[in-house]
Image (cartoon, rainbow, N blue to C red):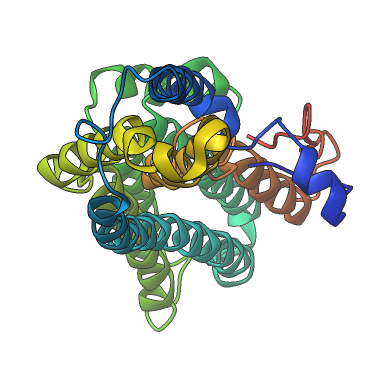
Length: 313
């Protein structure tokens, strides 16, 4: 996610880093070349009135194309915003689950204090590992070594053979909560509260997996890319009689608008990726870890996430 300290009107106009121009600049170079060639051909008489197009088809197609691009970008942003809401829900549920673990899991007898304290720490640490595992699961970039300080070595090794590692961690959480209930460390009336938090976490994961595993229909995206490309590359032949030497400039401006909207939709369609405008899952996961470790009274905390080159990952 792009994080900028200077959001003035002028700086936003001239900024390059993080803008869609980085993704479409080569397409604009091609549009400029085609427009320059069309202009030269027309002005030299090689492209007569009988071979040039009229602006009318481009007006009609451009209107329909803008509607399609608006619909596609709206659908992509819905996916982006839903992903952000799901991770916001995970933040809240993480805090609630930790609070309930620290307040509702209590020793049944004076000799249980040590074991209960260890269980509380285990449950919170496993939840932190779960958050990081969910991030890696959605980004398909696994680094199990990052979980080494949060999970027992045997449990960490068992994750190697799991296809859905966050779900395996959630299963283990449920088993440990049930075991604590059987030992009398959780009151029967409090057990549903902890179970409900685990259900909420599973719902968040399911929502994220739905977004990650269900992209927009491929045929629709291919059709949109083709129409945008055909429109922008052929536009100079439809406006050259009207704009003359300004044709390359006009074609590039129109190409920037249509190619830009198309590229923005591509970038935010998958909100859990590593593009500059994707969600900062690493930062959110680290912030969750910091807050939860503080609740345990730990002093050795990760550094607060900071943007690198104005990008928060």
